[in-house]
Amino acid sequence: MAELFLDYMDIWTNKAERALEILGKEKFDKLMEHMKSGVRQSDVEQADYFEEFKKGLESSYDVTDADMSSKVEMSARIGGKITLQLLSKKNDNELPVKGLVTKAVDAELIESNIEMTEDDWALGVRDKARKIRAHEFMLVRGRGVREGVSQETDISAVEPLSEELKAFMDNYQDELLAAMGK
Image (tube, rainbow, N blue to C red; front, side, top):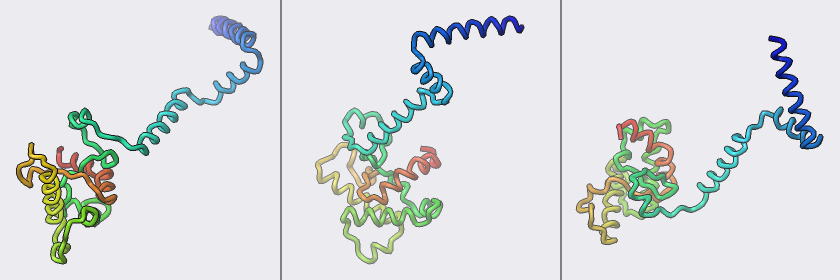
């Protein structure tokens, strides 16, 4: 067994000496230091890809028709929509931050310039969400969109305008939809 190991070491030593001759002392030492450092090329590439990914998130993105036909959920960052069914008192109470849904809905009402009376502001989360739905329905009908939108209840999701509703969507929508089995 020892003889086999010594044969292996002789082969390795010969290859190392040959590499030293070919590369020269400086490059060989640099190569050996790199091998000792434990830095893998895949780690370096992963860090580079992550930086590119972060830059991509910061840049604007136009959603094309091809993207829309794929039925992929889009985040608020690239113009996705919040499912109105999630804007409920139940979710408002069950999320880690109590009252988050109410704050997000109120911010959306303000950002969308939806007229509200004092009595309207006293409504529950679900009723306020219905006002957002009614407003979206009027906007869709005003743009002349008729296909698939014949009544207000055909609007099941809206594109959030307020930062609060976008944050709620990005942070909690997937989790809540998964809990509902969607």
